[in-house]
Image (tube, rainbow, N blue to C red; front, side, top):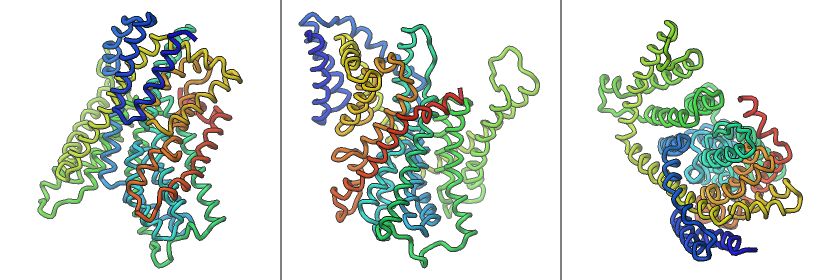
Length: 532
């Protein structure tokens, strides 16, 4: 082993140690990289010319259209979380399934899936459901282990069910590495974040099914640990229940279908769809705000539910128009029919602008807009700062020949391609005990992905398995982040040991889901291949 390989390994271990110490991630990555760049130059194994590429890396990151989706989807998630959508969904699903043993648990899983498809933010989902549903489940006689495990696992579905922040970041990293690999073999086939969204959809639903199946099995095996809601507390008026379901469930479902549907059908890119999601979440939050008693009829018409509802319908109208007509303005010739459709689209855009202004006024008046903007800025700044630090780390690591070191290690792994894949998955799983998914995505994935892709592994299949693996790390004791989030809002009588014991069955379910995707790659590839 030469000095460059030794420095590669020491650099990686130094970064891990710095991250475990709690030091700021971006500065730990950049500082360690600069330190080893100087050491490498001293020993004559690193060319400082590599650092000249760093400004172009930053510029490339800041001008990457795909990454614009990150703050927009974060805005969408925080807006929905602050507008009490989760609270209404939990109450409604509880009324729908509460008469069944395990019904409250099933409700939590379904709401977790819906929130995952509309927010993609694990921490917010776990905390929100922990505050709202855990006291209710404990009051109804649920086992603390089952209640906490269900909430923690359901909250992590935002990692795998699109639109997920981890899928956007993974998709961007894998797309870049896959492009480099394809150029090496002179056979470039584009890979998009939308492909990864489509690939993760079926595995995400499989995990939801596994969670529900486990709760049903536990309700049969241990019925006392998952009791039904007492008959006197159930909602018996079927008409009122259906009306409530339509009122509470329909708006977020329409938003989810509009965002994911536009991506999967190719009507919009993930970035464009994230803008639709941000506007849709704002309209939904504004629509939910109660009218002030002092508000007159004119004010209600200008800034009330009417323009907001009209804006929501106008968004759906724009999707329908874009699917049927060519609305591009830069063409040399535009037919009369298309011109009419374009004029109509301009009218719909005006309605959307009116409704959005009305919604923004309402959520600003309630203090929701200020919090959402601040939280979105904080999360987005964290992600992009880590991305810049990771870019510097990657430059130095590769300048020291780290990519060759990793390639040699993986090629030497027993079992060939399968053995290398297993080794990477185990490494990511173990690192997930200690590191955040953003750190793993930006540090580990760029190092191992090129080697695995050169071995012929499908990038969508690889990305989905990595996403499930990272989701599992959120649940794994003792350092699963979802467990920490839940511990922070759980009542004192729920011990940390109970939370850990409750999470273990769901970790097993996660590994079963990962095994199914590994054994049946078509679960991840059939949908994106069909949509291409």
